[in-house]
Every structure is written in structure tokens, then in C-alpha cells.
Length: 273
Image (tube, rainbow, N blue to C red):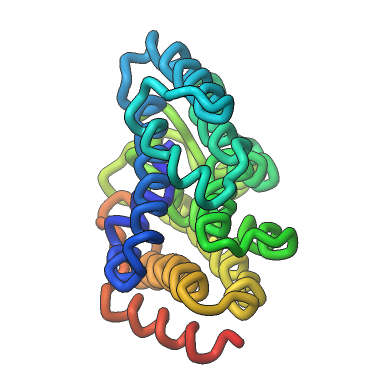
């Protein structure tokens, strides 16, 4: 699982990080570092070692929340953030569980099945971010889930070929079959029309889900609003890039235009009230 937060950090969110106060930057980077570390264990460690290593992370989280000193540096780096921002353990454990699931489940038959995966792989990140800003009210957490699932779906669309090379398919099996798309089509150098139609369907869904996050942005103020609007703008920028490429996710590197993402970000800040 390549968590969308890593991609957001590379492509869109560094601008927001630079304008946030140091304390927020420090806390967000601790969260990002943990998420990236867990993703790397689930994707890059020797396959026979992954479950054991993920279990070590679970044990270290238990040490952290029991008041003991964690052994792993990315978990140890969370200590100040967890204490200062009163972050519960559950979102961290769900990120570990997503990577554990990736070791045994490599296909999802329906879009609802994929949303269930996003409950583990993506939505906890939004919860963590809202906790960092002291904005984790129940209604906001629910809206955040919609936004974060959309961002994860967009990343799945960008990374179809990469995911398939890892033995994973994050496009609904029912829809691949309905559009006449064979799994082997995901390994090509160009994107056949049937696969483009599947990706277009996912992209449209994700765009609508991102726009469903409008009340979340409107409910926030200050730096929390700035940060969350940045995520939404980055997602909409990637949707635009997918559409611009005619959903050619195998033959084209899908990257949002920085200028367009920034313009969308400013528009969201100005109008989503």
C-alpha cells in the first residue's frame, strides 16, 4: 500500500507545510514518517518478513501508549505528537492493519469492498491530521473519511501498473469484467480503451467524493482549513491530470500541474464557506 499521504507530501502539500507553524510541521512530519515507514514494511521488506515486522510495529505502539519507550525510531518520533495532540492509538493500528491485509488480500470485487480497504489504508490519516489541528469532531471525521477515501482511489488510478507489478489490483473486479478488461491489460505499456473506461469511472466517483468534503473545509478555520484545502486541491488537480491524459494511466505519468493545484487551493479557500 502506497499511502496517498506520501504522494501528497511529494506533489502538493509541501507548500502548505512551509507556511504552517513549526509545531504543526513537526507533528505532521511525525505522522507522515510513521505512515511511510509502515508502507515501506508492507511493500518493500522481504515478503517472508513483512508480517513479523508489522507485528513489531504493533508491539511498539503498545509500548508507546503504555508509557514505555518505543524501540523503533518512527514510533518513538510519535511520542511528543501523541501526547501534545491527544491522539488515540486506533488510527495508527489501522494503518498497520491495512499493510497486514495487503499481504493476503490482493483483489477487491466491488467498489464497496475497496471503500472498506480505504477505511484502513486512508481514512486514519485524515483522523490523525484533524487530531494534530485539534479539530477531530465526530462530524468532521466522517467528512474526512469521504475525502481520504477519494484521495486513495485517485492514487490507485495513478498507480495501476505499479500495483499490478506488485501483484495487487485496486480496481473493482466486477467493473473490470463489465467493461471487458482482462487483468493482463494492466501490465501493458499503453492503456486499452476498456481499462480507460474503468479508470474514468473511478476518477469520477473520487471527484464527487472530494466535492462532498466541502462542508469539512467550511467547518475549519486557520491552519487546519489551509491544510485540508491543500489536500482537496491536490486531489482535484490529479483528477484533472487523469482527465487530461484521457485516463492513459499506463502510457503516461499522471502528475497534477502545480499551478493548477495552487489555483484550485486558493479557490477552495475563498469559496468553500
